[in-house]
Amino acid sequence: MSRRCSIEIPKRIVQTGKDVHQPVYNRAAIANVRLLNPEYEYLFFDDAQVNAFIDSEFPQYRAVFDSFSFPIQRYDLFRYLAIFRYGGFYFDLDMLLASNLSPLLSVGCVFPFEALTVSRFMRTTLKMDWQIGNYAFGASPGHPFIGAVIRNCVKAWKDPNWVKPMMRGSPPLIKDEFFVLNSTGPGLISRTLAENKDLASTVTVLFPDDVCDRSNWHRFGEYGIHLSEGSWRCKRSMVGRKLTDYCWRCMTQWRLRQSRKLGKSRCNPCEAT
Image (tube, rainbow, N blue to C red; front, side):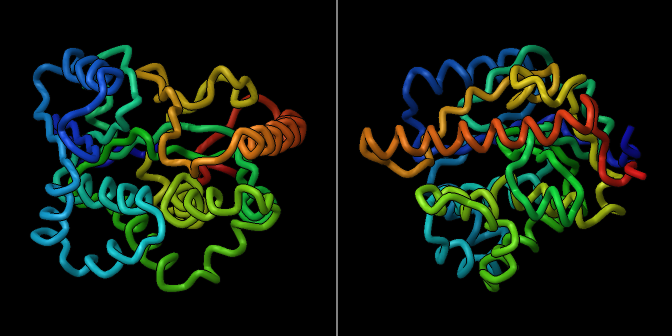
């Protein structure tokens, strides 16, 4: 079990989207999150409000924010900055919750186990065959782990060579997706966790009983599930989509075979021997 932070996560939920006029699918998910946590402050940021937030709260990151090649990278950085400033829980718009979040308030910082990683660098160099997700997480304001994640986003922007180890073995067809995942997304936050064991001790990871059971992937523990809509991914032709799906299936089978040899359970890297 991770060491608990002395500062609790505030009762606040942060979400973001292009504008306030969301499709019914997203509105239903938003309603679910709010109805299960009626006592929580709810903050929704559309694109204009995200830009105003950067200008007012973090103007030092304006150049970084504007220079990202992919829009999802800006949304990734924003979610970290918003939770760092305000504290609370961030959820993607395709998240469904199953229960109230209040049992998690005392842990200070919480992330979901997302899936087994396909990154050779993570597996061989950092000795971590799994990754955490950024579709849902919570932290107290100014939490040092979120601060480290933000610094690594800037590092990845300034020095693309820093990202290259995480890109080894990525299929050319989906190289752009891998770059996003490893420069601002789950790959980056998982690397931050693995490389900073002192900070990792302040993070609670919601592990399932069996990390090799794919039905346990993309869940916020027992509190919710990520529907993995993947609207940020590059648009492809039908042939391109089939080839992409084939690449992901092959990589998934490979990582499952390797990880099953290590057993069902995992622990925070700060607890690994």
